Length: 164
Image (cartoon, rainbow, N blue to C red; front, side, top):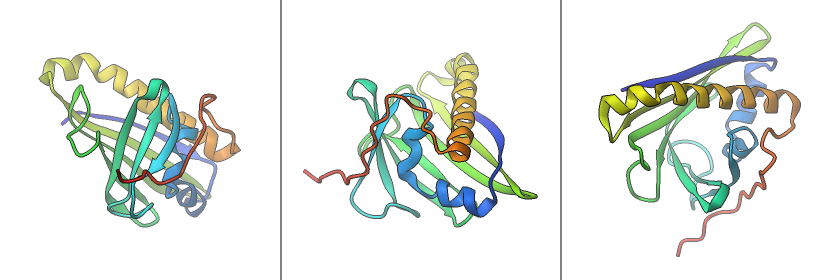
């Protein structure tokens, strides 16, 4: 399965970085084109926590925690509702991992994916996916270190999604 990855050093201790990272409602501050976040009913952190991230134009993506290592990171499965991953993905996940580096912390972001179009499409889109993961990492660093959102269109909502 192809992986898009990028790593940056945060000028934060690992504990300070983990305090921010574990708050799943913060993603709209650093993921490009997100406008908000709503939690599905249930946990808001740990395995099983699930959120819907909102995008411009009424689009959305659901992300559910499938692995959680307290203090060091987690893995999100990307999906749309109860279905599989959204087009063009056959499956996709996104991981965040922290590692102390002296008084600073290295964070590594990775998107693992397979595409419905197979290896040809994976090859064609690899550069674009690497660019997106790099942008998310750079935005996360700027947001974590300054507290200033990197997303001008963001209007965060951390309310729960009502079960209909």
